[in-house]
Length: 332
Image (cartoon, rainbow, N blue to C red):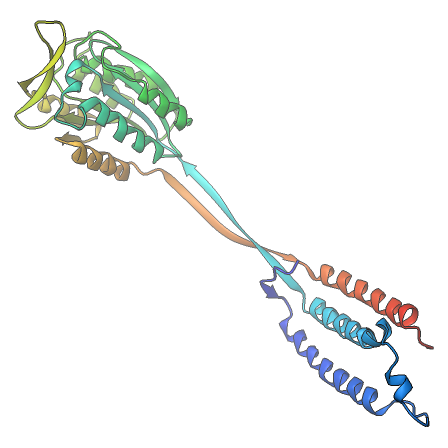
């Protein structure tokens, strides 16, 4: 009720000055206008216990003054405001195609390439609340881990469930890209993107990666390719003589030429990530390149609240009348 941001007629508030002569006249009448009665002594009267009437004798005037003030406030038309926003978000449809081959367990990332890709990819998903995002994984073949969705919490949970070895080993980059394109080809979004992350050379699958890139271009899908792996050699997982897993230094081989061609054919870009920090920077750059269109319209709606002040004034006036003629009974 008292959340007032402005008065429509603020000049009316000058009428509050009438309270000054009212108070002055009341004080003068109280001090000078008392009836005079001659008595021999006032000692007995002074010893009488003062009742509530003594303490409330000024209440009617105070209430009447408040009524006048409230009426003036109401005449000034106080208004409250409500700030509103209309947000029109035009999201982007994105499919993340993630390599989960055995080489993604290499330890040149912390703790390994696959875990780093999952963690940083999850943060990318959470940072794009207006987009529909899907997830495709590939190794020797490819499958859809999640269709495009706005349920990013469930998507991150599915991302965390990804493990190397879920499918036959290998690196079917063409199949992974084609599966991602298939998830987007029916999309009516004005912006469609695939983020393809791999650490190797295409050696499996039935679809050539460049053919999949041509299909993506035909559907207006941009492909950002990311090659993950340090320069030179990296500790790669390998089975030892006892059937366990050990790590051996192996040469890092990424078909960067092919990944660049895929990106160039579709209007995307190729990136090389050599550690966790670089991979995070790449996702941050893609996040900036693919900005969702968000239009925010701010407006303020003003509401009249003078009627509330009038109701309060009427209520105080009734209290003043009851106080004057009932509790402090006076002859009108």
